[in-house]
Image 1: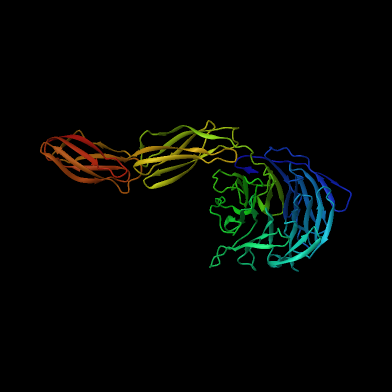
Image 2 (image 1 turned 90 degrees about the vertical axis):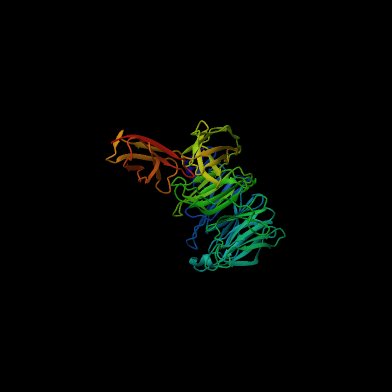
Length: 577
């Protein structure tokens, strides 16, 4: 994996053994040698349907759906929090959704016509036969019950648009019931705090304007709360759902929308939050989302190519401008993108579990990421300086400073962001790299005469806190111009005097070629000659027939403009008869 902050790899050797007992295969994978902040395991699956994290027992469950045929078997790969494979659970039917009960003692597994109930201590199962599902279920445990979807289509090619029912299983009474909620497509479920549950509808030809809705599951039966469809009156802006998640306190809902990016909504009415998250990097399409259980971070997964980040781990508070930790997954050791619904956190926020896939969608990886637990202080020291001492409009200007940071040296250089504020407003100058010694240089070409205030900011990252901004005001003057003349020492009243010259203007290019004023001063007085236009290369030529003998002073001048100083030059020619 190529990351913006770290480069890490995980190599694992798999040792397989078959245990006695029906449908239970164990594959032991010794701990891989990797940096403490991340482990990566190649998953023994060729398709993916669900991810569940048991924080009580430190187990991660990843389901291989294997939906190609009604009779296909399924499997669940089980890992610990260090990335070691503990076991593989094999089933006689395909597997879709996964859900854990409140204390992590039971894993519920969605099958074609059964909900398996696995004891997470022994991995023994007890099947509960339910309505037939040929397309893949979504499961959620909320309010003491297991809610599961039941889509059915005789042809798997029609699964994306088939009618799907929402059903419930009550462990306390060992009964199943249909909730009477249903709609078209592979409806998705997500449980949240306070016995809340989300149901979202993926975009499909039978649902041109899909919905998102919140349920209260606390009373033993579902009570629908807020609901929203997103298309406007013209039919544009419809939800293209890839995942959904509640914030740690349940007040917000984040939705990766493949068309609109990460939507942040208020749980109460599903209205847009007052402040949302910044857009994903250009070229990244939202695919997954998860909030840390401790409320500190949000993970946003995406499908992107090349070095464009596929995963951002950032503060959950959208007002916090701390730069995210970015991961760009590339190649056979890491996958190429985050799989839809492929992100979950440990309950305490200490680990993020990310399932990635290749471009073909037939290989999968599990990444176990530990965000930094400690942030270090940063500060600007020594003020800002600039060179040259006299700034000129349109001329390069360097603003220099120093950023100090506590803690260990970062794996990747820190970057500062700079702006310039002048009479025309505030202008973003971009980011600039901080060198190993803490120094940085902001390069700019101020475009206006007058005062320009430069502000340099360090927004922080997951390892470093932001620094207080630092500013300096620079007086920007006009750019210099110059005129150089080449004239003969002597001339004659009988022949014209030819003077050549060069006009040079620094800073911004002149909008038009300069027109120079030419005067001649001799013993008869001063007169103005015809003006001369400077050629494209800055040269010009003056031809004059003197009017009297003696010294003739030829002065060539330019008056300047809003961004350039005036300039002049004089050449003296002695005129003979």
